[in-house]
Length: 593
Ligand code: F6R
Image (tube, rainbow, N blue to C red):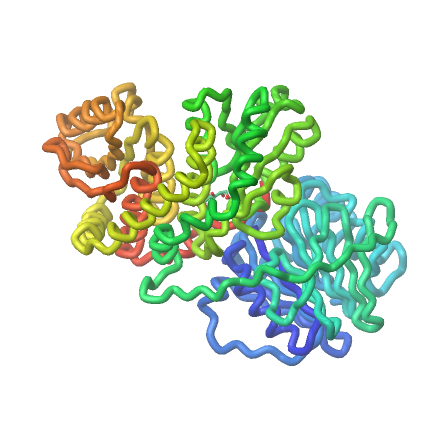
């Protein structure tokens, strides 16, 4: 949550604006840019999305610091937007994270006479820095004071400042930070590698507990450990990941485009990775106990993977990262944990991974963002390679995660890698055919129009499709703001059926497997109460009020069933006029707890 981008270069403010646009997925409540000119810092802030911005011109400056906000403390207002300027205007500061001991620190500052202007926890950091500068009779903020004050903050925080004497400094704890540079000795500090301006040539990943400091006057760049105060020599590596230029094309939104891309990115998830997949399966075979870990959509993908592992005869438990407490005593050096994260920066997930590692557990991660924290912490890491996912709600990354888990299952149950690749190619072909079937696509669009009238929707799935029902319901909530609940078809009669009345829409995911008979029972129970059953299945049935035909594939029932529901959700949101790429209150990378 929240994105940080700073630049030391010719036309720095313009570069920061571009960088912020690239990391806007991290928060789009408001944004702000602070720039230094002739010893004066000026700050420009605005609420709303950067992408909606037209014709904004910045002065030519060499040093700028920007931020895109996802509000945690204090509403979405211009005052609460970052950067926050010190009262004596000697520095401007941005933060990505949460100061967990903010109440305590705020009370102390107030009793010491500090007057707050915003409702943010960020301003506490500003106040503490000013207090320390006063104590030390310093007119400008130096790295010693910056590092000292940071150590009083609890929580996962990354903060950055520009000072009126031309310093750019940042400290990382938890939330990601990278530094880029080029041969002209221009620098940028950024929350992710893909956002770095195209003229950056090399980068380093700043580790937790490190401070990076650049002095414009001397051009000196230093990395220090904030506890030991020792200088750390870090080797810059060439930037080999560039943001793929991604246009919405005829789709009109990234989300719709990314749903369609699912038919083409499949082979990338496995191609050339036989050795790593075999390594992963060996680790799983050698483990005493397997865990899967993730949050949100990714946790439905891991849930499905754990389900498949159990089907293959392995002891596997799915953990939602924010509910990991009761599992903590089970982790040891014989445990292996599979972790899915599109961003690799999810605070809830990474915190449990840190704990697992301390107990000796091995981590296999599947991530879509190069250079992420989770990748660095893993014993074996896979890059999903489905391309940047720009819509905030996950579709193609989720799809890739489910495919990764299915591939592991296929290997563990004896399929040869080569045969898996053939199977994936066949699936890709069938999916493309399905997408180009206008009749089916039109039907989904029409159903979507119809369903927008409803405030509640239920989704039923079972067995192989249980987690697909949970994911479908989450997408409906996130994008079309409809109250949706996903649950097992078996659960219906144990309570939820009380909510089924005339015309209540129930989306049902039906596989041609041993669960079909029970799903049909659930569907007839819904129909008997007047409910409307919209069924995603291979074959039609009299019990279905509406039928959405699935691609005619042998395998990958989860993956083929999720696509019609993603499409329906996307169309519903479009009919309602919502921004499907940036749904309200959400951010793509959830780096706060
Ligand atoms: C939903 C969605 C989220 C993420 C979750 C984990 O569409 O995108 O639920 O799946 O926040 O994020 P990552 O995968 O980055 O760890």
